[in-house]
Length: 154
Image (cartoon, rainbow, N blue to C red):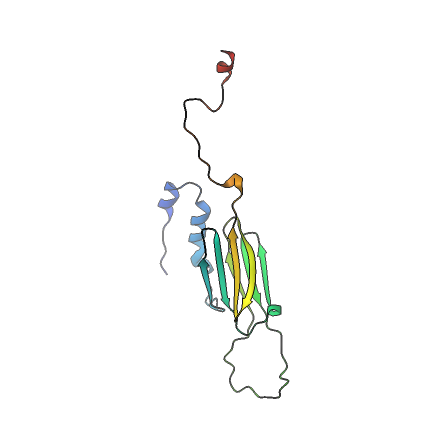
């Protein structure tokens, strides 16, 4: 695995310390068994995203979605079924093992909805930045924003 030195980027940016720290840590948390279930992350709009997980064989009651501070955890645990038909399974290719998928969410991203459709679990995310945190335009003018004591006395 290659290692990248992001130190020059720290010097030329302001406020992205957390982003570069997360990029540094990516290699440390890779798990070889983290390929199940497969998933897609789509960008639907400027502030809308969707995570789709392939969870064939799981029912809604077998899945749990938990949203914590900047973390989305999706768990699947198949309930043990008794073979009521009496048939013997010769080959079982459909995975029914339990899983846990964790997704790191950016600030102000929250879960809007989730639905299970044709073996795919779709989790819709939306980024809602508070009005106080949105960028604003600062007018440039001749007048100072605040008056000093000297200006008030004159």
